[in-house]
Image (tube, rainbow over all chains, first blue to last red; front, side, top):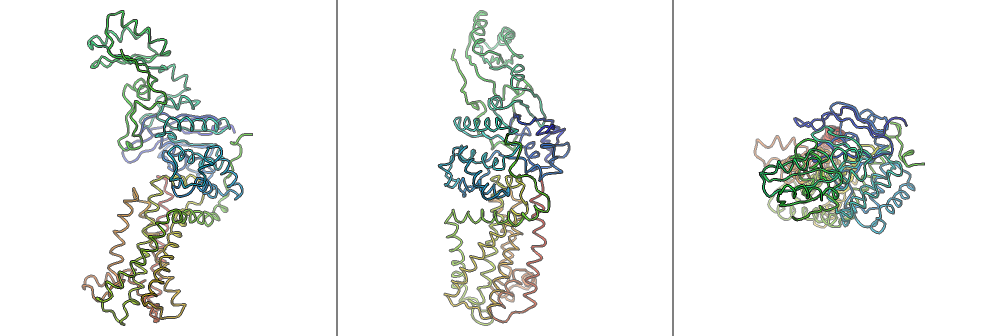
Length: 340
Length: 269
């Protein structure tokens, strides 16, 4: 196959007055992962729903393995797997029966259905729970089963719409490992996420999406070059001297430091956080400034958005229920906070 | 050799897909009936509700309502049959709304299965549950003096009309379920047409006892037509015109509401 596994061109979709997609171009070569990174309401789910044939775009073009999603939905459906934001499994069926249901609806031979089901149950560590109704499963088990269900037909292209949202860190890492194995096996994946760390770990390329548009795209390294690997956040006791401190730190920054004048808080995206920290302290100290607070953390989606757009990632008012987790604590790795 | 090279379920030509409606509908029916198997409470409710309806209506209204012919239980049973199955058919709206809400319908729609099978299987399995309900009611009815006075064919035809009507209402119900934002909303919305339909009818009281403005409406109500047809069959003197009218209502409701529901299901918006 010479054509990309997933291709969209100028994809547009509006819900009434709300422009969900304002012209999205994506290309995902076969056997790679594209991470679609953005806040709630950015258009991630809309893009996935169009590619999974659940929605028809208003304009533009989308294809999977060269098959147009609008013209040939049945061909596309036979090539894809979809795991949505909510585990789409039947609560009252057992894990095994859920996989059997999908296998039967894929019209596999009865023997294939059974064999494939057992294979997936083993792979997803669900053998012991296979005979229990899904309503007795934990959140992580449901997500694993949901992912397994989308793999029954050995799809060439897999859509994962925020597969780890709401999962505890351990379940999240478990799911990441599964996703990594799939890609190693040659599956093409479009992964949407709100977690920078998730996109960083899994994706070959990352497209940052906001307000229905791709605002940055590149490999993880390319984005880090642009945005910095860590963020040093420092608060100056004398808020009036904030601009002076920001000026001192500018040479250390990967991109322009941001200054919150009101609180005397300066965020400095840097390339080598731990190494830079000492220099930050030295410079601030040398100028006779008093540090009220100092911390080093991995850039959050908020930091990326602040850098790219100059504003915080905004949640869509229609979509506030899907992610109750507070934005700051979205990382598997906790902030390294140093009290001054 | 990677997994990508050969999906297990390659796309099939249109002709083969048409044959999938039946097999897929059977799969969906299995899945829906498993809900009852895994929730024994549902089976208990499916059993107790019809018993309760028969006993309550027979003993509470039995003494108060004078009916032509005299035996209120015989008069009542066809009415209770129809009312109970119509209420039962509201399950179609609630079940579909639930599947939509939980994302299961999205999963089904992303599979290369026959789309219509989700609705065909849903309306069919809900109608099977209704058939069970009617059989329970018949048994309980027999214990308190209900009898089929006509031939076995009349009896089968009477049950057939009741179940056919249940199936038709399940399709009406499917339209509401597919448009509801939640299972609760579906439950509320479906009773708006269902209550007047069942009570402004000859199900429990003769239409003649109603105020003059309501009479023509109740007379034209398909519930009245089906109840009257079943009543004639139960009493052993069926009116062919009424039976045909009832069958026509059933066919008409399906012809209108099944395509509407299928269109709604297929709509990708």
